[in-house]
Length: 344
Image (tube, rainbow, N blue to C red; front, side, top):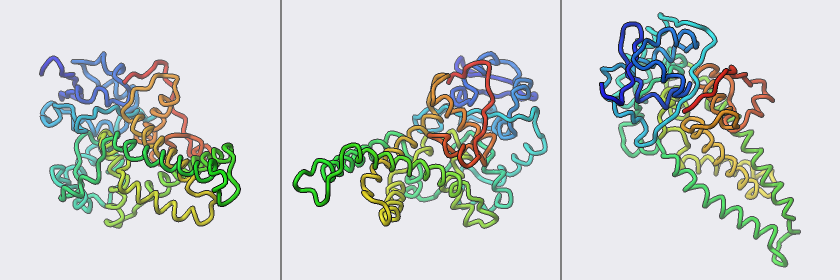
Protein backbone atom coordinates (compact mmCIF):
# COMPACT_ATOMS: atom_id res chain seq x y z
CA UNK A 1 0.00 0.00 0.00
CA UNK A 2 1.14 3.56 -0.73
CA UNK A 3 0.04 6.90 0.70
CA UNK A 4 -2.33 7.27 -2.26
CA UNK A 5 -4.16 4.03 -1.51
CA UNK A 6 -7.52 3.95 0.21
CA UNK A 7 -7.71 0.58 1.99
CA UNK A 8 -11.01 -0.69 3.40
CA UNK A 9 -12.24 -4.01 4.70
CA UNK A 10 -15.37 -5.90 3.83
CA UNK A 11 -16.37 -9.35 5.11
CA UNK A 12 -12.79 -10.15 6.07
CA UNK A 13 -11.31 -9.14 2.72
CA UNK A 14 -9.24 -6.09 1.81
CA UNK A 15 -10.07 -3.63 -0.96
CA UNK A 16 -8.45 -0.47 -2.31
CA UNK A 17 -10.98 2.22 -3.24
CA UNK A 18 -8.41 4.80 -4.37
CA UNK A 19 -9.19 4.39 -8.10
CA UNK A 20 -12.91 4.44 -7.34
CA UNK A 21 -13.05 7.51 -5.08
CA UNK A 22 -14.28 10.03 -7.65
CA UNK A 23 -16.27 7.39 -9.48
CA UNK A 24 -18.20 6.52 -6.34
CA UNK A 25 -21.79 7.56 -7.08
CA UNK A 26 -22.33 8.71 -3.51
CA UNK A 27 -19.47 11.18 -3.74
CA UNK A 28 -16.02 11.38 -2.18
CA UNK A 29 -17.36 12.85 1.05
CA UNK A 30 -19.36 9.73 1.89
CA UNK A 31 -16.22 7.57 1.69
CA UNK A 32 -13.53 9.70 3.33
CA UNK A 33 -14.28 8.59 6.90
CA UNK A 34 -13.88 4.89 6.13
CA UNK A 35 -10.18 4.75 5.20
CA UNK A 36 -8.67 1.70 6.88
CA UNK A 37 -12.03 0.65 8.30
CA UNK A 38 -14.75 -1.88 7.59
CA UNK A 39 -17.46 -0.76 5.16
CA UNK A 40 -19.81 -3.64 5.91
CA UNK A 41 -22.27 -1.72 8.09
CA UNK A 42 -22.09 1.36 5.89
CA UNK A 43 -23.06 -0.60 2.78
CA UNK A 44 -25.99 -2.18 4.59
CA UNK A 45 -27.06 1.10 6.17
CA UNK A 46 -27.14 3.02 2.88
CA UNK A 47 -28.85 0.22 0.96
CA UNK A 48 -26.44 -0.75 -1.81
CA UNK A 49 -27.65 -2.95 -4.65
CA UNK A 50 -26.36 -6.43 -5.41
CA UNK A 51 -24.54 -4.85 -8.33
CA UNK A 52 -22.52 -2.73 -5.90
CA UNK A 53 -21.44 -5.77 -3.87
CA UNK A 54 -20.62 -7.59 -7.10
CA UNK A 55 -18.47 -4.67 -8.29
CA UNK A 56 -16.32 -4.88 -5.15
CA UNK A 57 -14.58 -7.85 -6.77
CA UNK A 58 -12.93 -5.43 -9.19
CA UNK A 59 -11.45 -3.45 -6.29
CA UNK A 60 -9.74 -6.23 -4.37
CA UNK A 61 -6.16 -5.40 -3.45
CA UNK A 62 -4.88 -8.28 -5.58
CA UNK A 63 -6.40 -6.73 -8.73
CA UNK A 64 -3.20 -5.09 -9.96
CA UNK A 65 -4.56 -3.86 -13.27
CA UNK A 66 -6.78 -1.31 -11.52
CA UNK A 67 -3.98 0.31 -9.51
CA UNK A 68 -3.46 3.08 -12.07
CA UNK A 69 -7.04 4.24 -11.51
CA UNK A 70 -7.48 4.87 -15.22
CA UNK A 71 -10.39 3.21 -16.98
CA UNK A 72 -10.83 5.80 -19.67
CA UNK A 73 -7.50 6.46 -21.33
CA UNK A 74 -6.83 9.74 -19.52
CA UNK A 75 -10.41 10.76 -18.74
CA UNK A 76 -11.21 10.47 -15.06
CA UNK A 77 -14.78 9.61 -14.23
CA UNK A 78 -17.43 10.36 -11.67
CA UNK A 79 -20.06 7.75 -11.17
CA UNK A 80 -23.60 7.67 -10.00
CA UNK A 81 -25.72 6.94 -6.99
CA UNK A 82 -25.74 3.22 -6.22
CA UNK A 83 -28.80 2.96 -4.03
CA UNK A 84 -31.51 0.45 -3.31
CA UNK A 85 -34.34 0.77 -0.84
CA UNK A 86 -33.73 -2.77 0.41
CA UNK A 87 -31.11 -3.03 3.13
CA UNK A 88 -28.58 -5.83 3.24
CA UNK A 89 -27.54 -7.98 0.34
CA UNK A 90 -28.72 -11.10 -1.45
CA UNK A 91 -25.71 -13.40 -1.08
CA UNK A 92 -27.07 -16.00 -3.50
CA UNK A 93 -27.69 -13.38 -6.17
CA UNK A 94 -24.18 -11.96 -5.79
CA UNK A 95 -22.66 -15.45 -6.03
CA UNK A 96 -24.72 -16.08 -9.18
CA UNK A 97 -23.50 -12.80 -10.71
CA UNK A 98 -19.92 -13.86 -10.01
CA UNK A 99 -20.60 -17.21 -11.66
CA UNK A 100 -22.02 -15.46 -14.72
CA UNK A 101 -18.98 -13.20 -14.89
CA UNK A 102 -16.68 -16.23 -14.74
CA UNK A 103 -18.21 -17.55 -17.96
CA UNK A 104 -16.56 -14.70 -19.88
CA UNK A 105 -12.92 -13.95 -20.55
CA UNK A 106 -12.67 -10.18 -20.15
CA UNK A 107 -9.19 -10.15 -21.70
CA UNK A 108 -10.82 -11.07 -25.03
CA UNK A 109 -13.55 -9.37 -27.11
CA UNK A 110 -16.89 -9.76 -25.35
CA UNK A 111 -19.28 -9.54 -28.27
CA UNK A 112 -18.53 -13.05 -29.50
CA UNK A 113 -18.86 -14.53 -25.99
CA UNK A 114 -22.34 -13.31 -25.09
CA UNK A 115 -23.99 -16.63 -25.92
CA UNK A 116 -22.48 -17.90 -22.64
CA UNK A 117 -24.71 -15.59 -20.57
CA UNK A 118 -27.63 -15.24 -23.01
CA UNK A 119 -30.27 -16.93 -20.81
CA UNK A 120 -29.49 -14.43 -18.04
CA UNK A 121 -28.48 -11.45 -20.16
CA UNK A 122 -30.80 -8.90 -18.56
CA UNK A 123 -29.53 -9.67 -15.06
CA UNK A 124 -25.91 -9.73 -16.21
CA UNK A 125 -25.95 -6.51 -18.25
CA UNK A 126 -27.55 -4.52 -15.42
CA UNK A 127 -24.90 -5.64 -12.92
CA UNK A 128 -22.15 -3.06 -13.39
CA UNK A 129 -18.43 -3.85 -13.24
CA UNK A 130 -15.45 -1.56 -12.74
CA UNK A 131 -13.14 -2.68 -15.51
CA UNK A 132 -12.19 -2.23 -19.15
CA UNK A 133 -14.17 -3.73 -21.99
CA UNK A 134 -13.26 -4.72 -25.54
CA UNK A 135 -15.95 -5.54 -28.08
CA UNK A 136 -14.22 -6.49 -31.35
CA UNK A 137 -11.07 -8.35 -32.34
CA UNK A 138 -10.59 -5.87 -35.20
CA UNK A 139 -8.80 -2.72 -34.03
CA UNK A 140 -10.59 -0.71 -36.73
CA UNK A 141 -14.05 -1.81 -35.57
CA UNK A 142 -13.07 -1.38 -31.94
CA UNK A 143 -11.89 2.19 -32.57
CA UNK A 144 -15.40 3.07 -33.78
CA UNK A 145 -16.96 2.09 -30.43
CA UNK A 146 -15.27 4.66 -28.19
CA UNK A 147 -14.99 8.41 -28.42
CA UNK A 148 -13.34 11.13 -26.28
CA UNK A 149 -16.09 13.58 -25.28
CA UNK A 150 -14.43 16.60 -26.93
CA UNK A 151 -14.66 15.05 -30.42
CA UNK A 152 -18.45 15.43 -30.29
CA UNK A 153 -18.53 19.27 -30.10
CA UNK A 154 -15.53 19.43 -32.44
CA UNK A 155 -17.57 17.56 -35.03
CA UNK A 156 -21.07 18.98 -34.52
CA UNK A 157 -20.53 22.64 -33.61
CA UNK A 158 -19.21 23.55 -37.11
CA UNK A 159 -22.10 21.64 -38.73
CA UNK A 160 -24.67 23.37 -36.52
CA UNK A 161 -23.14 26.80 -37.21
CA UNK A 162 -23.07 26.15 -40.96
CA UNK A 163 -26.66 24.90 -41.09
CA UNK A 164 -27.93 27.66 -38.82
CA UNK A 165 -26.24 30.46 -40.77
CA UNK A 166 -27.05 29.07 -44.23
CA UNK A 167 -30.73 28.64 -43.32
CA UNK A 168 -30.81 32.13 -41.79
CA UNK A 169 -29.42 33.55 -45.04
CA UNK A 170 -31.77 31.49 -47.21
CA UNK A 171 -35.02 32.12 -45.37
CA UNK A 172 -34.61 35.30 -43.29
CA UNK A 173 -31.86 37.50 -44.74
CA UNK A 174 -32.48 36.60 -48.39
CA UNK A 175 -34.11 39.91 -49.42
CA UNK A 176 -35.11 40.02 -53.08
CA UNK A 177 -33.49 36.64 -53.74
CA UNK A 178 -36.01 34.78 -51.56
CA UNK A 179 -37.77 31.99 -53.46
CA UNK A 180 -40.74 32.37 -51.11
CA UNK A 181 -41.91 34.86 -48.54
CA UNK A 182 -39.04 35.43 -46.08
CA UNK A 183 -39.39 34.25 -42.51
CA UNK A 184 -39.24 36.73 -39.70
CA UNK A 185 -36.51 36.10 -37.16
CA UNK A 186 -39.11 35.06 -34.61
CA UNK A 187 -40.44 32.35 -36.96
CA UNK A 188 -36.92 31.16 -37.69
CA UNK A 189 -36.30 30.78 -33.94
CA UNK A 190 -39.70 29.09 -33.61
CA UNK A 191 -38.62 26.37 -36.07
CA UNK A 192 -35.32 26.01 -34.21
CA UNK A 193 -37.31 25.52 -31.02
CA UNK A 194 -39.56 22.92 -32.70
CA UNK A 195 -36.40 21.04 -33.70
CA UNK A 196 -35.31 21.06 -30.05
CA UNK A 197 -38.69 19.65 -28.98
CA UNK A 198 -38.54 16.95 -31.67
CA UNK A 199 -35.08 15.95 -30.47
CA UNK A 200 -36.25 15.86 -26.86
CA UNK A 201 -39.01 13.43 -27.81
CA UNK A 202 -36.54 11.35 -29.85
CA UNK A 203 -34.07 11.28 -26.94
CA UNK A 204 -36.69 9.76 -24.66
CA UNK A 205 -38.15 7.45 -27.32
CA UNK A 206 -34.81 6.05 -28.47
CA UNK A 207 -33.63 5.51 -24.90
CA UNK A 208 -36.82 3.85 -23.74
CA UNK A 209 -38.09 1.87 -26.73
CA UNK A 210 -34.88 1.18 -28.71
CA UNK A 211 -31.95 1.18 -26.29
CA UNK A 212 -33.98 -0.67 -23.65
CA UNK A 213 -35.75 -3.02 -26.01
CA UNK A 214 -35.82 -6.52 -24.52
CA UNK A 215 -33.65 -8.65 -26.85
CA UNK A 216 -35.25 -11.86 -25.60
CA UNK A 217 -33.29 -15.08 -26.02
CA UNK A 218 -31.91 -14.29 -29.47
CA UNK A 219 -28.11 -14.16 -29.29
CA UNK A 220 -28.05 -11.89 -32.36
CA UNK A 221 -30.45 -9.41 -30.74
CA UNK A 222 -28.48 -9.61 -27.48
CA UNK A 223 -25.28 -8.68 -29.34
CA UNK A 224 -27.01 -5.77 -31.08
CA UNK A 225 -28.43 -4.53 -27.77
CA UNK A 226 -25.08 -4.82 -26.03
CA UNK A 227 -23.38 -2.94 -28.83
CA UNK A 228 -25.80 0.01 -28.92
CA UNK A 229 -26.53 0.40 -25.21
CA UNK A 230 -25.97 -2.66 -23.05
CA UNK A 231 -22.23 -2.09 -22.69
CA UNK A 232 -22.98 1.36 -21.25
CA UNK A 233 -24.90 -0.27 -18.40
CA UNK A 234 -22.28 -2.98 -17.95
CA UNK A 235 -19.25 -0.65 -17.85
CA UNK A 236 -20.88 2.66 -16.83
CA UNK A 237 -17.64 4.21 -15.56
CA UNK A 238 -15.77 4.08 -18.88
CA UNK A 239 -15.54 7.69 -20.04
CA UNK A 240 -14.73 6.74 -23.63
CA UNK A 241 -18.05 4.96 -24.15
CA UNK A 242 -20.54 7.59 -23.00
CA UNK A 243 -20.96 9.84 -26.02
CA UNK A 244 -22.16 8.79 -29.45
CA UNK A 245 -19.32 8.29 -31.98
CA UNK A 246 -19.65 10.92 -34.75
CA UNK A 247 -19.85 8.55 -37.74
CA UNK A 248 -22.86 6.47 -36.57
CA UNK A 249 -24.39 9.65 -35.11
CA UNK A 250 -24.16 11.31 -38.53
CA UNK A 251 -25.75 8.29 -40.23
CA UNK A 252 -28.57 8.22 -37.67
CA UNK A 253 -29.15 11.97 -38.06
CA UNK A 254 -29.33 11.55 -41.84
CA UNK A 255 -31.89 8.72 -41.63
CA UNK A 256 -34.05 10.66 -39.16
CA UNK A 257 -33.84 13.80 -41.33
CA UNK A 258 -34.82 11.90 -44.49
CA UNK A 259 -37.95 10.66 -42.72
CA UNK A 260 -38.95 13.93 -41.08
CA UNK A 261 -38.38 16.10 -44.15
CA UNK A 262 -41.21 14.27 -45.91
CA UNK A 263 -43.84 15.99 -43.78
CA UNK A 264 -42.16 18.94 -42.01
CA UNK A 265 -41.82 22.48 -43.29
CA UNK A 266 -38.34 24.04 -43.18
CA UNK A 267 -36.73 20.69 -42.30
CA UNK A 268 -33.15 21.98 -42.30
CA UNK A 269 -34.00 24.69 -39.77
CA UNK A 270 -35.62 22.07 -37.57
CA UNK A 271 -32.60 19.81 -38.08
CA UNK A 272 -30.42 22.64 -36.79
CA UNK A 273 -32.51 22.83 -33.63
CA UNK A 274 -32.50 19.06 -33.33
CA UNK A 275 -28.70 18.92 -33.57
CA UNK A 276 -28.42 21.62 -30.90
CA UNK A 277 -30.63 19.42 -28.72
CA UNK A 278 -28.57 16.32 -29.48
CA UNK A 279 -25.27 18.06 -28.69
CA UNK A 280 -26.71 19.40 -25.45
CA UNK A 281 -27.94 15.91 -24.54
CA UNK A 282 -24.59 14.22 -25.24
CA UNK A 283 -22.65 16.80 -23.22
CA UNK A 284 -25.11 16.59 -20.32
CA UNK A 285 -24.92 12.79 -20.45
CA UNK A 286 -21.15 12.88 -20.22
CA UNK A 287 -21.22 15.47 -17.45
CA UNK A 288 -23.73 13.65 -15.26
CA UNK A 289 -21.37 10.69 -15.42
CA UNK A 290 -18.12 12.54 -14.87
CA UNK A 291 -18.81 16.08 -13.72
CA UNK A 292 -18.95 17.53 -10.23
CA UNK A 293 -22.16 19.60 -10.13
CA UNK A 294 -23.03 21.51 -6.97
CA UNK A 295 -26.05 20.71 -4.86
CA UNK A 296 -29.05 22.83 -5.82
CA UNK A 297 -28.15 22.99 -9.51
CA UNK A 298 -30.05 21.42 -12.38
CA UNK A 299 -27.14 19.17 -13.31
CA UNK A 300 -26.79 17.93 -9.71
CA UNK A 301 -30.43 16.80 -9.83
CA UNK A 302 -29.96 15.19 -13.25
CA UNK A 303 -26.79 13.40 -12.11
CA UNK A 304 -28.66 11.77 -9.22
CA UNK A 305 -31.66 11.09 -11.46
CA UNK A 306 -29.52 9.34 -14.07
CA UNK A 307 -27.78 7.39 -11.29
CA UNK A 308 -31.17 6.07 -10.27
CA UNK A 309 -31.76 4.81 -13.80
CA UNK A 310 -28.44 2.98 -13.89
CA UNK A 311 -28.47 1.36 -10.49
CA UNK A 312 -32.03 1.19 -9.20
CA UNK A 313 -34.78 1.64 -11.82
CA UNK A 314 -33.48 0.34 -15.15
CA UNK A 315 -36.98 0.53 -16.61
CA UNK A 316 -37.68 4.11 -15.54
CA UNK A 317 -36.02 7.56 -15.42
CA UNK A 318 -35.17 7.55 -19.13
CA UNK A 319 -34.75 11.32 -19.39
CA UNK A 320 -31.15 12.53 -19.41
CA UNK A 321 -31.31 16.19 -20.39
CA UNK A 322 -34.89 16.59 -19.13
CA UNK A 323 -37.44 14.77 -16.95
CA UNK A 324 -40.38 16.15 -18.97
CA UNK A 325 -41.19 13.01 -20.97
CA UNK A 326 -40.83 10.82 -17.89
CA UNK A 327 -43.61 12.89 -16.32
CA UNK A 328 -45.75 12.58 -19.46
CA UNK A 329 -45.29 8.81 -19.87
CA UNK A 330 -45.34 8.08 -16.12
CA UNK A 331 -41.78 6.74 -15.91
CA UNK A 332 -40.65 9.46 -13.51
CA UNK A 333 -38.99 8.38 -10.26
CA UNK A 334 -38.46 10.26 -7.03
CA UNK A 335 -34.81 10.18 -5.97
CA UNK A 336 -34.34 9.79 -2.24
CA UNK A 337 -33.67 13.08 -0.46
CA UNK A 338 -30.42 13.31 1.47
CA UNK A 339 -29.63 15.36 4.55
CA UNK A 340 -26.27 16.37 3.09
CA UNK A 341 -24.71 17.36 -0.23
CA UNK A 342 -22.73 14.94 -2.37
CA UNK A 343 -19.30 16.00 -3.61
CA UNK A 344 -17.37 14.44 -6.46
